[in-house]
Length: 208
Image 1 (cartoon, rainbow, N blue to C red):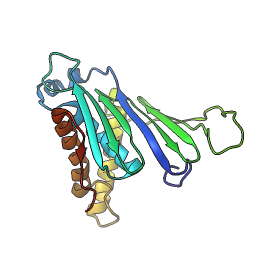
Image 2 (image 1 turned 60 degrees about the horizontal axis):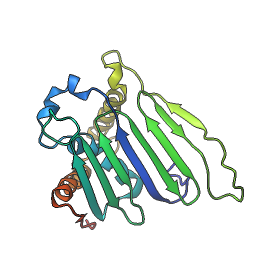
Image 3 (image 1 turned 90 degrees about the horizontal axis):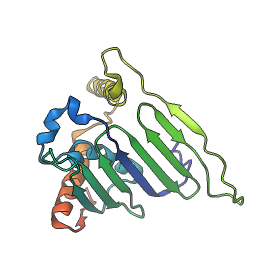
């Protein structure tokens, strides 16, 4: 719906991943990572921002650590300039994601946890000042017998990803996940760490 222009041209977004999910219980090795949340989960949020707005012109990041028994950061706040858009991203633990995007015609918001919830409240582009009530649409992920129900969102996404990669290897269509594209997202991750260390925004080349 976003790609079809349902909210118009997006110019602002706020993307947050904030959760108290006990990630260290199942993945204790994460405690020993020198670079944790921005590289582990933030990479997905930054990739999401690229889907909405394209490539970033600059990255400004601040990091901190809440859990004192880990080596890396578990809080990262990132501001990116992407053309006219300046998405504001916060990441911490997993697996709940919320986002909102403002377009020239409407505003849309979503939250994702154990099941997807997408509220669709059109609030602009109308002569009326009354805001219609949000229309909730739910898209729960499929559950597989081999999967941990607490990780249904992540596990089910891997099934779809692997199916797409297999399709590409068979020559039946393009792969949505490519090394070239992943490197563009990783560039944002390392620019975020560079920005946090220097305490200033990092400008990026957008050509190529």
